[in-house]
Image (cartoon, rainbow, N blue to C red; front, top):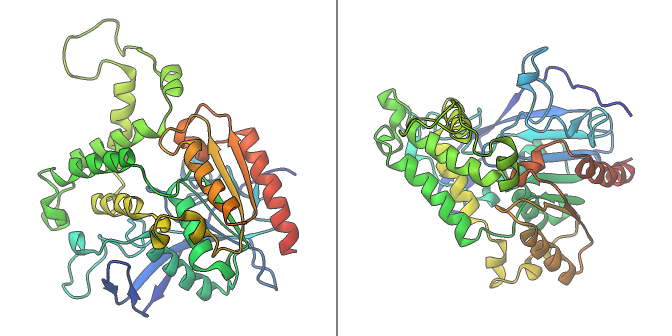
Length: 378
């Protein structure tokens, strides 16, 4: 089967007037969700797949946003499309930008109807369960009663887990990639340092920087640089950059000298150019708060016992941000809950970012699993 491009994909917007009560107790009276769909929903409505995005992801999962420009391909274009592991010739695939995002869905940049100004820091914090409730409403709007699969990597994998617990009868398969049942203290610490870089930027203005016509670019840049270090493995950094200098000799200063410094600053500047600082704060807090086992006194198996889905859990050997051990915690809890689960630990040098990359073993595992999902949906 030959993989093909989806071509140009146009995002859509769903508006909701029904209030949504968030886990924090705050209420969003109305909101928009931006989404894209690929493929066709079958007559039985049995072939729908939800793709949940990670921290900096969005609705543009696959295809191009600009014709003939490969730079505008979706963030998981190597995984989703005609003839690809998640085959849009067989599935109806939905990707969306979560609430609090900065790619069109209602978030801090949106106008607060009570003030007529951007929400900024007044936008309420959201939790993973809030996203899942909003996604369920979008599913209703699209005519999807049951997802053939809910799929995600990293923070997206946490959403897939949450779906299986909160709406067990609406998920037949949950695919959890490079995720964890909760963040470790070290991961919360990384997130807080990144947030502090933003919060202490003089251009942040308490989250209301839009009104000042500025962007806290320095804080965002530092946050992304720190995060990017944790997404890569030491082996990949050594292979790509080592101790290579940009020039011929040491300059004995604090400007860019090493290639890795140049790379990180480029990534930081690029990120600060398109991502919203308040959204970054919201997304990292959602990561920190995720801990479904808390509902059962720390017993993850007891919570996952509510699920009726089959699970595929995937980890990557060099991922130290969400190590294979964290995925095995999920697998062990599923086994204790007597839930069907398949587990694959992929030997990859690419660190946490491996879930976004083209890897033959990884893609073959996904393809084999979704062959079964497709057969069930037929």
